[in-house]
Length: 123
Image 1 (spheres, rainbow, N blue to C red):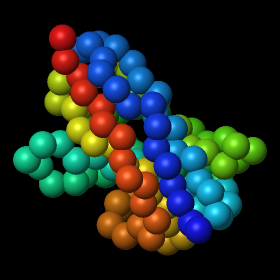
Image 2: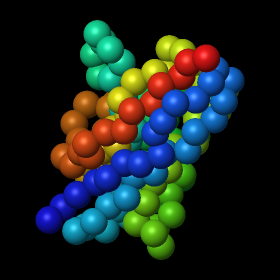
Image 3: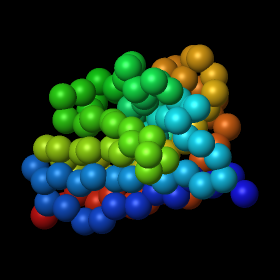
């Protein structure tokens, strides 16, 4: 069964950091481009950051540039999202997704999705 599982969410104070993990099972994540998305309460889902299969290309939303980074560990079949300088407006459910498509940096079509992990930024 093809599966993506996110972990690492939680409650953090403004200015703090969290590192989310996206672990794949049933397929080799190394062959896919991977993106992180989020859905805040009352808002549409948005693409946050993505990375190419090779790891050589990343694209970030303007709202997270300079604060969020994405990385891959192919040996662990896992992609990570490091979130620094967190703000209350970063509060959302975060999802990872994978696609074979070359237009992955448009955040439009992804074939495989995780169930999401809640991130809450609050004092």
